[in-house]
Image 1 (cartoon, rainbow, N blue to C red):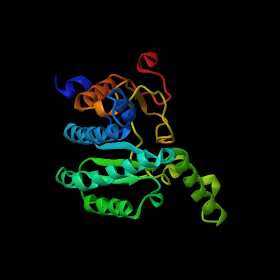
Image 2: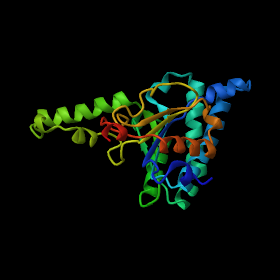
Image 3: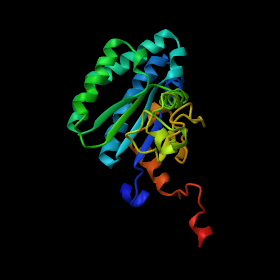
Image 4: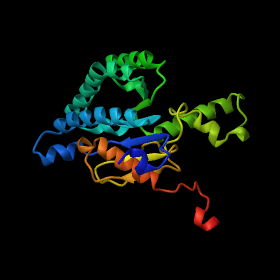
Amino acid sequence: MALEDKTGPHLPSHVAIIMDGNGRWARKRLLPREAGHYAGMGAVRETVRAACDIGLQNLTLFAFSSENWKRPKTEVGALMGLFRAYFRSDMDELVDRNIRMRIIGHRGRVANDIQQMIEESEKRTINNTGMNLTFAFDYGGQEEIVAATRELARAAADGRLDPETITPELFASRLFTSALPSPDLVIRTSGEHRLSNFLLWQSAYAELLFLDTLWPDFDRAALESALAQFGGRERRFGALDSEAVA
């Protein structure tokens, strides 16, 4: 059955994924955690390809949280190595697929070579007009909200902004995701039921889908199934459902 038949005519404009379960995937196979992260990069590659083929407009992947710095140095080092490897191995394909890539998060804490890779990759894809692929890297939702609040507070203190004019739309324009629509669907793999500080403001009315699948096992079929489940939900944004209105 075609994906359109399963989800109806409307795909979500923006899908965001919390990629969780690499460590458990490795542990089940008596492998080091780094092996799970390596397998997880394969799932990233397949998911990006599938999302592009399906026709998603925006895909955001939670790659590294601001809290992940607390993990053992060896694991953090392995994650940074995988990030470097992704830039080296996949950028040509992203360009060929007309994908525009962005990175959101705190760039100042990563190594200089990674900062340079980020800047070069964004510049290389800036004119692409296909799917927007965003990696949340060294990202934390609370930190993002505090930074936006601090920016507006400075503007008000300097007399450049009347506090009475602050609206949700103005606040959202100060977030890392200001160029993107709010996510319609947030997926978390591995069976955990929490957002873990991911897109807290932006996900106010997102549909949440928690899957038992470990991230390295997430594939095209899993994405299509998630989109089908989204297509079966009725989004009300605080209003009554259609049956109640009728």
